[in-house]
Amino acid sequence: MDYVLSLLGPLAQGAAVTLKLFAITLVLAVPLGLALALARVSRFAPLSTAVNGYIWLMRGTPLMLQMLFIYFALPFVPVIGMRLQDFPAAVAAFALNYAAYFAEIFRAGIQSVDRGQYEAAKVLGMNYRQTMRRIVLPQMVRSILPPMSNETITLVKDTSLIYVLALNDLLRAARGIVQRDFTTTPFIVAAAFYLLMTLALTWGFQRLEKRYAKFDE
Amino acid sequence: MPNSMSDTTRDVPMVEARDLRKAFGANPVLRGVSLQVRRGEVVAIIGPSGSGKSTFLRCLNHLETIDSGHIAIEGETLATTDAQGRCSYAPDAALRRICRKTGMVFQHFNLFAHLTVLENLIEAPMVVQGLPRDAAIARAEVLLAKVGLSAKRDNYPARLSGGQKQRVAIARALCMEPDIMLFDEPTSALDPELTGEVLRTMRELAEERMTMLVVTHEMGFAREVANTVAFMDQGELVAARPAADFFADPGHERARAFLRHML
Image 1 (cartoon, one colour):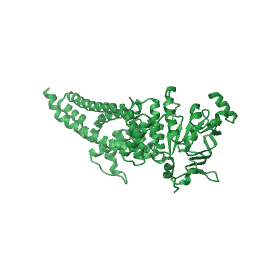
Image 2: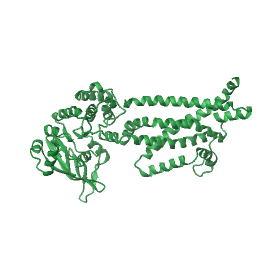
Image 3: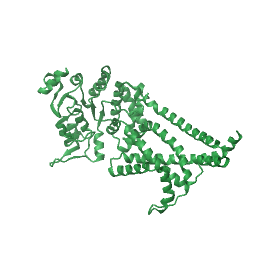
Image 4: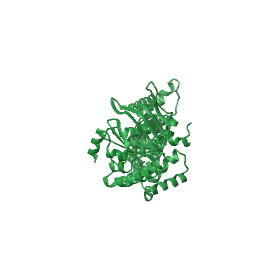
C-alpha cells in the first residue's frame, strides 16, 4: 500500500502533462473543427473541396506520424518551415488531427438539422450567418454530444503517443517506474488514473445530454 | 427605392405573378402560372397533389426559384425575365427586404425546436429587425393571446399538440408584421379534430383583412373564408374565380371533376 502511495506523486506529474495536452487540444480543436465543418458545408466548392482534402490527409495518416513530421521535418519545409519545441509540436499535431475528426462530427450534426428549420429562418428574414448561429448550431449540439463524448475519451488515451517526443506523460512515467522497480503495479495505478479521467468526461457528457434532452420531452 | 407606404400603392396588387415557369429536371411543375392578389384578398389555392400548388406558393417568397416569369410583391420586383428569356432576381438585400413582406406557415410547422414558444416568436424580430427584447416580448404576448396560447409561452414546441404548434407558427409569422401571409397546407399534418382550431385562427386573420394565400385541401375553408378560389392542375392555374361562383360552377372540366371527388 505504501508503495502504491509512493507512486502517486510521480504519476500525478505525468497525469498533469496528459491533462494539459488534452485540455489545450480540446480548446484549439473544437473551434478549428467548427470552422472546418462550416467550410465543408459551404456552397463555395473550392473551399469545401480543400477542407475535404485536409480531412482526408489528417484522418488518413497516423497521428504519431503527423507528430513526428511536425517535430522533425517541419523545420526543413520551405516557406512555412519552423522549429517547434517538443510540447508545442505535440499540441499542434493533436489539434490539427482532432480538428479533422471534430469537423466530420460537426458536419454530420449540421446536416442532421431539418431543412424546415432553414426554411423557417429564411422566411423570417434571417441571413445565412444568423440562421447558422441562432438556429442550426444550437440544435446541432444535441446530436453531436454522443460522438463527441467518444472522441474526447479517445483523445485522453491518445495523449500517450507523445512519448515518441520523449515527453513524460502518464503512461511514460508509469513505464519508467516499471523498468526501475521490476513490478507492474505502476501500470495498474496508471490505468486507475485514466479511468478516473474518462469517468469525469463520461459524467460531464451525460449531464450535457440531459440538459439538451429537455427540448424533445 | 420605391416607397411601399405611399397611397398610390393602394391599387398595386399585393402579389403579382406573371407566367411563372419552373421545372425540376425534365419535369415541368409550373407551366405559365399567373395570379394577382389584391390587398385584403384571401385566395384559396386548391387542386390535386402534384399540381404545383405548393411550388407556386414557395416561389413567391424565394424558397424556390423560377426558371422564367415575373414576380412582384406590393409593386416591388422580386424576379423578372428579360426579352432574351433570362430570369434575374433582385439583389440580395432587396430580395430579403421584399420577402419580409410575406410571412409563411408550413405544413410541418417548422418551429425552432431549441426555443420556447415565446423565444420562437421574438427571435426574428430581435435578430432581423433589431427590436429590443422588451418590445419584442410585448409584441409576442399580444399575438400569443390572439391565438389563445398565452399559457404555453414558456413551453418547448415538443410539448405542444399539432394544432397548438401551428397556431404558434402563425403567431411567429405575424410577429414580423408581414403584409401578406402564405399558408402551405397548414392543416394537412393535423389530426382531423385539431384542424378546427387552426382554421378558426386563420378565419380571424381573414376577418382582419390580412392578405392571404392558402394552399389547402379544406373545401369548407375555401368556400366560407376565401374570396377567390384558384384551381391548379398539372402545373397550370386552370381557373380563378370568386369562391361562391367557383363552387356553383368551376367553369372547367378538370376543376369540376376535382370538386366532385372532394365534396
